[in-house]
Length: 103
Image 1: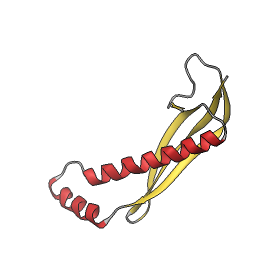
Image 2: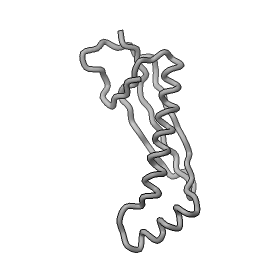
Image 3: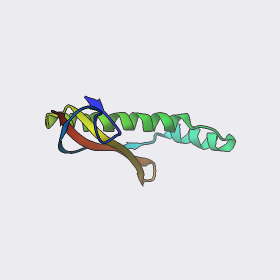
Image 4: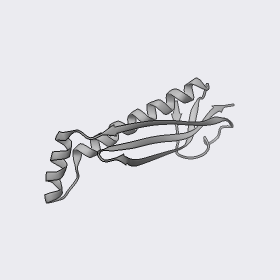
């Protein structure tokens, strides 16, 4: 499955099959929360949160790809990501784009 953030596949004619998305809600664990609190005292990257968001994005992308495969897509174009805190200690990550068939 080809994944592109641009809205076309260079040199290819495509047929749009529809929008696809993948979402996940991820929560922080106590260990990450505690270490993040300590890290804010000295500054710098909060590695535990970076890893958490990377894991969430990977899950969201897999779910998006799975949805595209059910439509018979060859690729997904116009991919975008979003995230938001939905409650204290939990964040939503979404990946979405347009499933396409290469003609």
